[in-house]
Image (cartoon, rainbow, N blue to C red; front, side, top):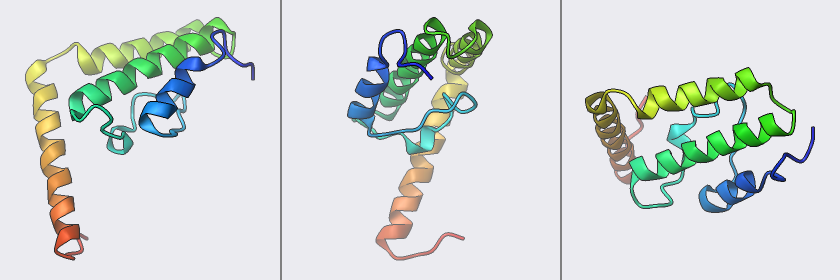
Length: 114
């Protein structure tokens, strides 16, 4: 493995902002439940995290660690997630926020959610 075309500076900055996260090609845009809310807005934080995933994929492609088709898969995942039905995306973030609130309340009151 090389050090990337851009020396993986994108990865370093992402890790500095969001905390260390291991990105694999299979789940490059997929660890939404583990993304730190660095920008105090879950949707913005996830969007910026996903932009870093595109940068990582491009860096990996430019240095020869990834194929062009692997890079294009990440682009397709990103576009499918962010440039499609706004109602579905909004519903996703509402449902996610409600689920996280429910878990926080369970923890606050010592209730186990099995």
